[in-house]
Amino acid sequence: MPEFPDPGSRNPLATDCRRCPALVESRECISWGNGPLDADLVVVGEAPGAGDPEADRWQGGNWTGMAYTSRHSGRRIRELLADAGYGPERCYFTNAVKCFPADPDAESPTNREPTAAERDTCRPYLREEIETVAPRAVVPTGKHATKSVLAMDDREVNGFLDAVLEPVESPALGTTVVPLLHPSYQDVWLGRLGDTRDEYIEKFSSILEYC
Image (cartoon, rainbow, N blue to C red):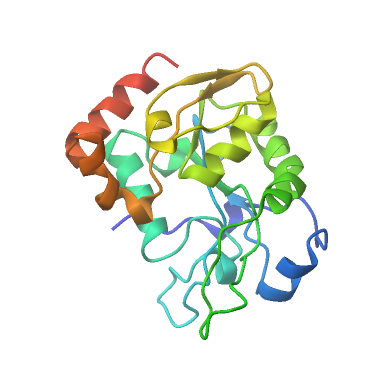
């Protein structure tokens, strides 16, 4: 099991944010980035899920205030990166959208996809984080995180699976973008890529050697 991040590594960029009224209404707290500010990688999730306040530590960013701290996705992506040679001392974790986007039609707390407007509104925070860390590579996980990162260079994502593990230079950010599968759907889509988990990690690690 990966190590739970030090709460002292949480990097709040504002004491509060009320730019998106629907997200203010649905969140428990803002899920800010966490990790060293001189990290090799900035790992970008889509948005925090509902989380589980009864969980042991890994409650999720909606409760911990730190991105990628859920029992499922948080632990899984941190473990994958560590297996690729990028442990917690080398990664800064954040989200494209910092607040839990609740599905208003669900009977129990469930996240919906963040809207384009929410990604746009939150993007200045993400840009500030990336510029502060100045990483070797930005690693967006999933379609919406990838869209948000590539939008900084006015790029679009046409066919997300085709973008996975395809490095893209980002003049706007001064670094390389290397998209990964979202950890929640990793097992489903690895077969579509034709890779085992070990092959996927090896390819990712090899790409980063040249970033």
